[in-house]
Every structure is written in structure tokens, then in C-alpha cells.
Length: 148
Figure 1: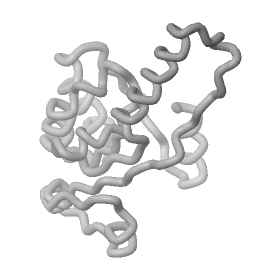
Figure 2: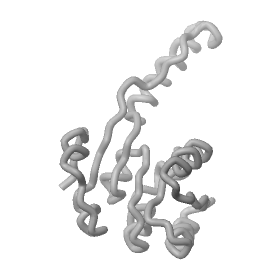
Figure 3: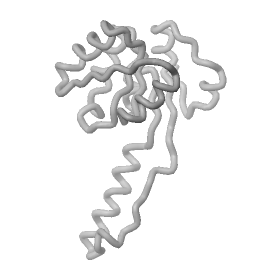
Figure 4: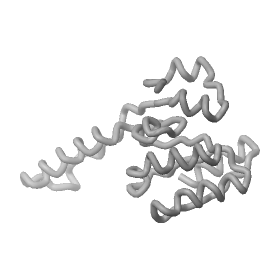
């Protein structure tokens, strides 16, 4: 993910800053550090640790005036600016069908690889307002959900 961020940032002529939190207590420090380094936004990496930290990430990011995007819809609901990603619950349900097939004798190497086909965009308009950001109408209309 970091390489993709660097490539996109280079095209936009901005310098990305990598920060890392290894535990819940580190999230506040990471947001403070990112803000001190001049960051205006935070991209939450796809990671099992971060998936359950939506409230903590959203609160800390807002305190440090960081517009935050995550792939977890729960994060946008918790107060991050937006989320864009697959339905993680649906992903886990699909994984359960694979486990079921394997337990019934299917060979894992013979099962097809599945990729998500639907990605949801959620925008938290309350967070946008708190950050003084205007959500372009085109973006709001294309969102799957706008949290008021």
C-alpha cells in the first residue's frame, strides 16, 4: 500500500509521511506526529489491528485536524472523514464458505480465488464540517452513504 501511496503522491507533487502505531496507545502519538510534520490527511492501512480502532483513530485524527480515510465503514461511522472498501463482513462470510468446503473434503488449491466486486464509499459530513471541508457535490452524489 505504501508504494501505491508514494506513486500517487509523486504525481500530485506532495510528500507522504509514513507513521506507524503498534498499539492503541500509539494512535494519539502518531496523529500528533503526523500533524507536527505538516500532514493534512491520514490514510489508515488495511490491518487487523486498525480495524477495531475506529473511534480512537477518528477522535485523535479530528483533534489533530487530519482528514482520514480508511477501508473500514465502521471508521467513517465512528467519525473518520470517509471510508472506501469492500464489505468486510461479507468478505468474512465468503471465507466461511471456503472453510466449509475444505472441511467437507475440497482441496484448497482447487478452489477458485475470489476478489471483491463491490466497494462502498461512505462520507461523514459531520466530520467534514468539523474540519472546515466542503464535500464536492459530485463526490457526495457518488457516495453509497453520506453520514449526516
